[in-house]
Amino acid sequence: MKKQVSQTISACSFYLRNINQISRFLPRPTKERVVNAIITSRFDYCNALLYSTSAINITRLQRIQNMAARLIMRSPRGDSATPLLCELHWQPIVCRVDFKLLVFTYKAKHNDAPVYLCELVCPYQPTRTLRSANNNMLQVKRTRTKAGDCSFAIAAASLWNNLPTAI
Image 1 (spheres, rainbow, N blue to C red):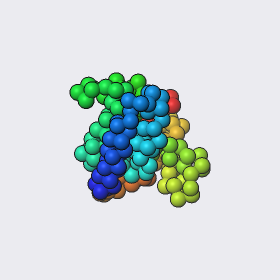
Image 2: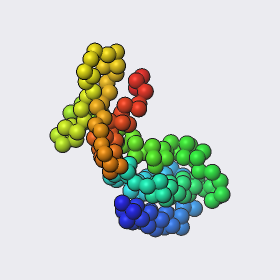
Image 3: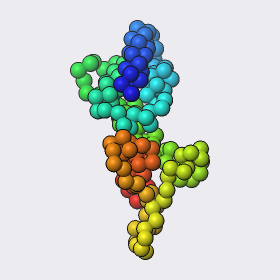
Image 4: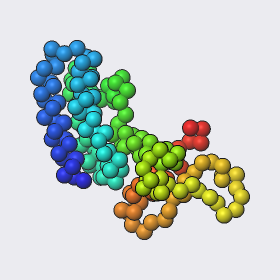
């Protein structure tokens, strides 16, 4: 995973440098479109696999996203990127990864995903009649390893069950 993240960062840095060279000639909406097409799409491609990656890799990707936000907004390097991300309506990398997993879970729950994903998502069925039986929860299977906790079936169910019931 470290190699994949490093390659993504390398490619994004290359494109950000190139976009930065022509950014003074581009209006802000055009810069947003270019960055969304080239940089943001690289973050979103297979980002569900980043669920199990280390915090260091997530931080490295977050730095690139912050650089992209600063480039679009023409903000100095020392300024905080959080308000810029809010103004651009961009989620942090961790939230993007969780959102992607939750989208896959929703589709699998409603049979809009491939069969192999639908089979991994099992609704929670308590052995006794409980009020919590109607909460639309998923069964979280027990695992013995950290790698098992990062599998789609476990990660999707635990993220889904952590959602507020009002959603």
